Image 1 (tube, rainbow, N blue to C red):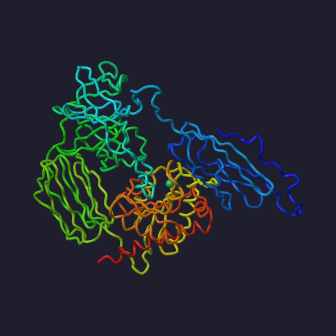
Image 2 (cartoon, protein in one colour; image 1 turned 180 degrees about the horizontal axis):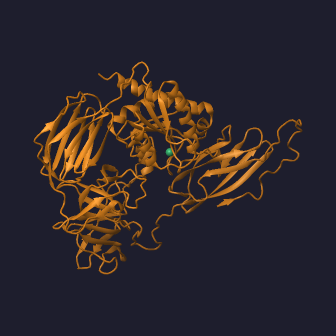
Image 3 (cartoon, helix red, strand yellow; image 1 turned 90 degrees about the horizontal axis):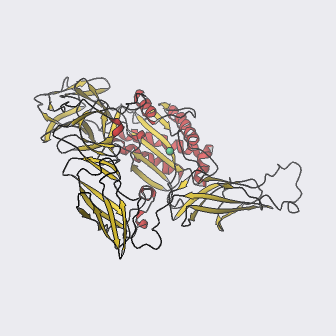
Length: 617
Ligand SMILES: [Zn+2]
């Protein structure tokens, strides 16, 4: 993909360079490097994209232009450009760098993701890449499927079914959807308002057996525009799920027995949605639908969750669902935690939700027979237990706490479900870090972003974490790093490490990068992410401290579905202190001083969080 310059580079040196003292270092010729988009990258934007890299060598001030647009070159040679893209699958960028008596030229070809183009000369057309859903779906009879497709605007659109019926499509009158990167990373998303999509159509398909083998008796989409008609087979096969004799499944996210997972299967409210439940291995449930590689579990009469089909193992046909009652519960106080023991009829699905000073356990598929709620030895942490039966087959048990939630975890013990409520540490308000165990996670590898001069995120995060470790130890804390070298480490190993060491706080350190299509000059700065409510105060304190240290724009904190902030045993946050792809922020990540500032921000943020907790009544 790289066209190295044949002419024009490293030229015109003779006769221009003045005589130099012999002690001067040899001047290297000007060299251009492009880090992004690399030869294997496919740009996913269509309007504009960023390019970044570095200019090396040369003497005196260096100027750079890309396709004639001047681009600022920083002292270390780093640069980033934001440029319009052609309406094509290839973009050629001409880079010209000049320095004192030297120049370099390079034509760089970037690949752009192809997009559908309506056929020329046709009034009726169908974007055959836009069928949603496509693939294999199975649902109980009577449910329906929302269909969406892109086709010629202003057309009459029908789905013709093999048994003679036809379903009408209506235009989707809502504006188009901006790319997810814009929603997630742009500082002002209102600027991305899109016009209504005149070429999008929607319809409702009641679930009925359709196209069972993916070939015979399928549905056909018909688009009529003027005197032109386009047709295409809708690539969807629909099956029916029988709930009269339900299929019972058991969850196991480690069916390959590699033993490197957290033994939790995440559940989503919609296929491929964000994580909303975390079911331990061994949980059983009833299967009530399939959507390609997603399986729907019927948790109770009114609750469903979608999980990865690869985490679902069918039990022998005829296995009855684990229905029954939740029995009397008991608190068991221990040195590090107070444990709630909940007798269940089987490994039923459940969910724990936290509020500031309470935890609620919801058990699906059971009724309450909680005759007794025993507090065991009188313990100050749990002030009150209560239960409710919000629906016929869901039971909730709420523990009110004397202190704000620090952490909790769950596990099955035979048929009993155990909910361990962690005792908050005794924090010294004068020296909040003294005696605390802090786990720092230097983000990546595997993966990790790269900066214009080639700085790799894992290198920067390890340097920052090592400096923060020293500062934490000076303040009297035990500081542990999830990795101390460049060996790749999976996400589960990192959170497992923090839990194994009973970390009081877990902070994962990263450097940010933008997805394609988002302008890097106006969308950059410091942000911090959390997942569970107990970590909000930690994320806020880290964000305040990092902004004060780093002096870049405050993008604020956010809730993010990241593995490193999902552990339940301790408050956890993930810092995106700087954007590695911006020259001045990459320079901070490269320098001792910048790394020290990032490290100080992390340590001061943790300290401020602990101090606030120490002052809790
Ligand atoms: Zn990262």
